[in-house]
Amino acid sequence: MSGQASRKQVNAILRRTAERAEKVSDLPSMADPPFACPPEQKQKFLVRRKGGAKTRAHLWVGNDTSCRMYSTGGLRPSRYVITETTDREICQMCRNVSER
Image (tube, rainbow, N blue to C red; front, side, top):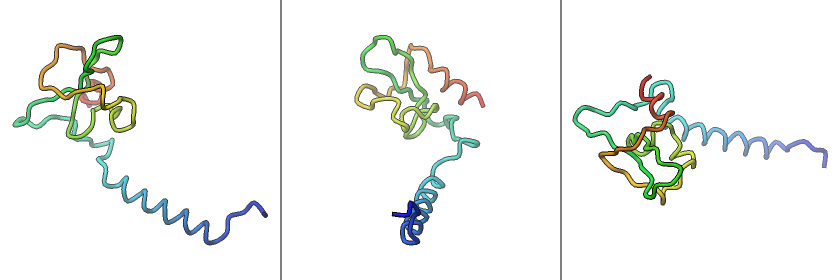
């Protein structure tokens, strides 16, 4: 092997990259995220089912948290539940993002 990719391999890589770019372009932009909850919709929170050391609530926006920890795998879905009220402190990253 010469250590260089063949033309076929390069084309496959470019095609996969273009497909990923199309998927990413469908996601909301971090520069203009829809983090503000519409007035007609109640704010929702993602809270851990059991207490313990990690008791902060996350702001739930549509299908992800404001801090994006849910979609990036930082939170195990089986350990959390979505609620409309919470008495817990809000995650610092969620607060920072929602204040933008």
